[in-house]
Image (cartoon, rainbow, N blue to C red):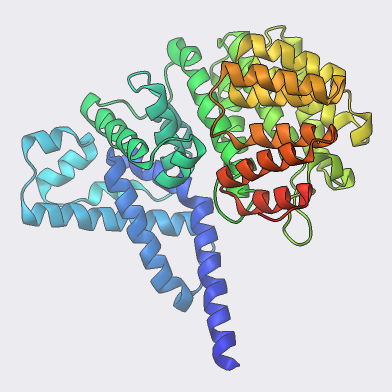
Length: 437
């Protein structure tokens, strides 16, 4: 028994270390990239710091300021790597040109102490977003790189989330990092005259980070709170930046920043009710609404009201308005599905994606009945390739079940189970349709 207790304590401590690392990873990595100008070197140094944490923290305890400890340690590991590179082969002129001036000087002097200025963790994550979302990079590379560096998602997780082969995603990351280095893309928040044109890309990656956290595409956990919290915090930083320093950003862009922040707060307000006592998924109609976070709802409602008052509606604002209707309904039965369907009709004129199409079809089914919902799903299938999109099969199975077509519903559920990579959602599907797979 003592041995079992010892092993349990070790596992608990290791889990605590890993969770602390996940919380601080984005900020620390962003700080290192800003100083080093090399994403690969920063990632390697941070990984070295994690190994050091696993060695030292069980003996010394988890430090009070985890982020500062990781940053300092990663800085030293980066210095060690630079020095080892110098010992093996002096930097060539071409290599020196790819390094920031402070690291160039240290390399020429044979030391790397220029990294010693990383004493406090400044908020570098917003700069990293705009670096990863630079227009010189294709959109698919922007999204993949930001989710990988800032969101901390693995290559496999990103590939699964976007339904693309793992080697394809890996190549995107390699090309994006190479482009940043070769093109010397600046690590900074854009100047005021170009910030407005760059906000859309930044909002997209913030939204995707939140989406992966809100419904993790892989693994045993339904919600990754670290990603949700990070996305909300980043959007708050961007909103404060615009309000304080870039007041000349046009209303449409600023309204969408407010809309996305409202959307995320309203969704995240349900976090306490989405998972049951046994870790099972609780669907929206069955959630205990008393567990919803009232403060987040109030903030989200105020933000969407402010955004819509600017009379420059955009996709994030419309989605936030839909979430607001759910938040304001005292019970699932009181949900205004007709108004939600109308908002989805508007949203489809702005952006037509598989997710929005399927959600629109669900709203149609709720407002007008399952037969009309199935018709809407058929239209969605014609407009998009939904062969590997498991929510499509879940929605259709639910409507078929309502119409009494149990065999067809089970076939679609089986297909959804084949495609779904999240253990909690798979278990919910089995319970919902009450058959073994």
